[in-house]
Length: 199
Ligand code: SF4
Image 1 (cartoon, rainbow, N blue to C red):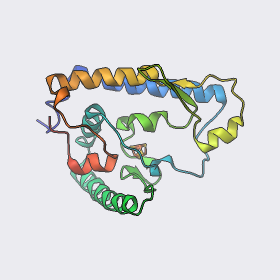
Image 2 (image 1 turned 90 degrees about the vertical axis):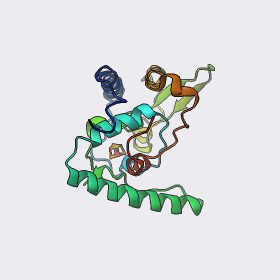
Image 3 (image 1 turned 90 degrees about the horizontal axis):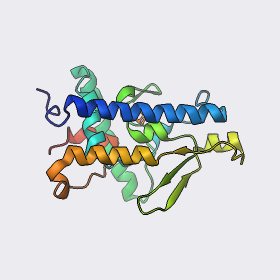
């Protein structure tokens, strides 16, 4: 049995895949309505510094990593280790790290089906209503903002339901451990270097 499989029952894995699929579909719908596409973009979002907060995404990422050839995983782990060292150095200098994700290979995601939530949602304008009722707005990436140039006729993508479903999955995964499990606050590189979550 792979190290991670005791956490990810088939039904659970299927629900994560469905959630990720629905995020993609919502993103595509908004992008289409805006007539916006990433093709030709001079930037690469994969060098953005993001922290991730769920065991669900961490475990599902490893569900994908464990399917790679040993040599590919070794190569990715080496890049992730370098990422962790360089990002810690940047943070110690008070800078936000700008380093390409260790999963990016020649500009493309090498673990595309398992990429995390933010990789699927970043780009188009979006909104999110927090459980306390406060609404947060995301304007979209710089290029999308330029593209729409202030035209708000297309409704932003609503992230609320996706976050809610992810929290539900997280509670299901953690079960009784939700009160005691340490909080997750990790980059993708850290998730790779640490190995699958131990719960
Ligand atoms: S997981 Fe894939 S899409 Fe997300 S930042 Fe890394 S390379 Fe880019």
